[in-house]
Amino acid sequence: MQNKTDPIIKNPEKIEGDELSPMDPPEAFDPPSIDKIDLEKLDPFLKELMHDHEGLIEQLNIFEKAIISIMEEGITKDIKEKIRDFFEYFDHEFIAHNRKEEIKLFPKLKEKLIETGHHSTAGSQTPVDILMADHIEALQLAAVSFNLFGLITKLEDKNSKLVILDLAIEQGKALVELLRVHIFREDNIVFSLAQKLMTKDEFIELVQK
Image 1: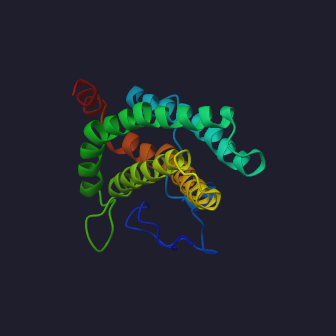
Image 2: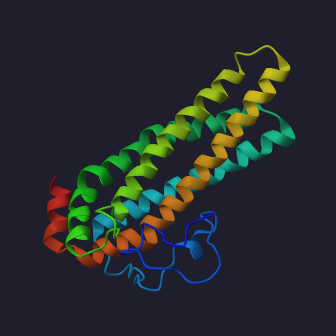
């Protein structure tokens, strides 16, 4: 279950009510202290990152449907192609998107978050550190899931195939869940903080890197 003290929220503050689940992002990560993003005023660089997310969400939906349908149809040619297409997209588009955030946005934003007190009370952990950890975990889950799906085609024993298939589906679902929560955090909380804390000139510097 999600802790009542979420490290991505300033300082962090207590959230009243029932325990929160990371699988229910709109409630889990919608603190009243964070202003909603005004898309009209959003910096073009942040708009670009959010646009990247739209493509990823579309691919996540296709991938999720594919791995769920395996339980009903087995691994068909169509499902194989959808799974392959997702991992190709992940390898090229998602990793490139991560680099934009990690090289351009995150270092400056972390600096601003620490300056303004948006970090944990026990240390200097900021929302940026949470997002960086998400990136690493997503890469690990994707690698494991991809390798497991690839291993299935090389096995001859039916029982072994079923065991590996279950593991591949489990890791794939975990990847989908992680990325959905990650995207929600960025689009609804972290980018809002970036817009609030960073100046127009600082955004220009990011683009010029």
